Length: 314
Image 1 (cartoon, rainbow, N blue to C red):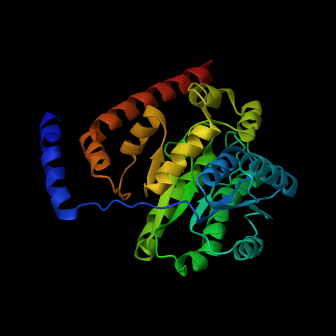
Image 2: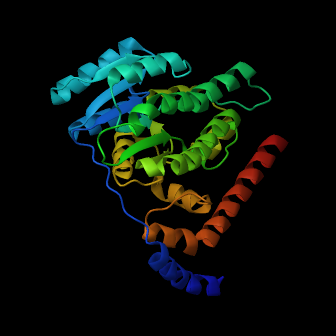
């Protein structure tokens, strides 16, 4: 282990001179940012942040009344109007019509999500299908609808597609079987899509926020299993504005993986795998601390499994 830590910097230094990861800057000011799930929570906080930086923003969500409230809040705060589109991401044709009406997209934030926590043995398969359809299939629908205008844009500057995953998309958690499956799927979509779109100067980001103060979290807490609460509910909760700021900063710098807090960074290192990495410094930490993060992860999982076993025995 010690030898590896010593040799890792030398290896990375050689790799840097051979590959030299290229930094990228994705401008926001004056560009069109299209956000799904934008009527509340992280999506609305992202809209506020993007508008404050001079972006033209469009929001898509299912509820027209909530979209109108979001539009009003943005107008009161910044004196600008945003485009709003009521559509269900499960309906590709409806999403496509909204994207075409909104106009060519420069930054696409696929933020919609639904979560019904429950052990799989107790969960109705309709709820499982709902989460997969909204969180994963819905993301395919949104991306596919926006791709033609993004690939054919006249603006030669870098563009971005950001997929909102979750820390439950980095590690499976008790009671999150369907949700984690839908969020893990976004990682595979992102990695493959980045290879397909890099020649179009479109850069993919995957965001892994922990529990965040949103209306959805309040509803989730009312119904999630006690074991889930014990495992996932012990950490502090972030504000939607904090997540939005770091998300937009990560998008602007073209980061593939955007994580939060120390545990999120450790999970990102442990799960780096074959994901792209533009930052030499972060690549160094991924290589140098991969073993350490794996040990920490194993210790965490050992404690989780002991807790579950003890709880079921009682």
